[in-house]
Length: 334
Image (cartoon, rainbow, N blue to C red; front, side, top):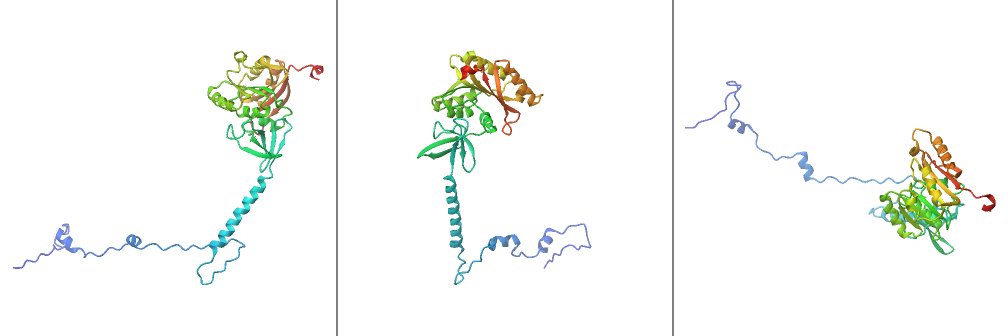
């Protein structure tokens, strides 16, 4: 006896789902799956066609006989190598044209090259202090190494480039530097005064003082003093009489600080340079009013200002005041 199973009629029960047997038999037989993704996996993509467009004005290359290539490997490479060699020769020619000229301030020089720069003769050749660039120039068969002086990191360099008349720091001078920090400007002062001069560098911060001591280890004309410049009597046994005082302390009472150190260490007829930062003294008043107030304070302490110069564009609201302490009579100065 043969039994034939047939799926339920859709008209008999519309809500009833077909049985699993009916769902299985209703599927179509399996076929090999071929999709776009599998086709891309099986078939490697075609190589892109690279078309090299010749530069404007360049002559088209002639194809080599036989059509094997266009010969651009050797020709193009030769032109490229030739261009590099030409630029190198031009660079060597420019490097040989550098020179160093003495500045009107003794001990300071001007480097003439691809870019002009203010430089000082390096007292310790082969060593930089704060990552500055070093240049070597041959003069009379002797090589001399110079250090570039960045006016954006040194108030004294900014004053020199600004056209200050006198800095009074020259070879064999004895300088008292107040606010030496890590020794950036002090190192250039060391170059200017040379091995026969002395610079006493006073710094209160111990963190900056460590860097200053490391600079002084290689420069024998720097004597670091880690003390507060407000109390010169604390280091009076370490410092002798000096010719110049340079102050960059950026304190509200910096005029008083300079006066105290001048009364203790500066000889009669000696000179001082003070860098005044207006915002550190009075942030509410204008810079010109602050500068005038500081000049009056200096005059009350037997410090005679002779010149005032702003440090634009290197420093904002800064000025350098240059003067003389207890000027000698004209007969004695002659």
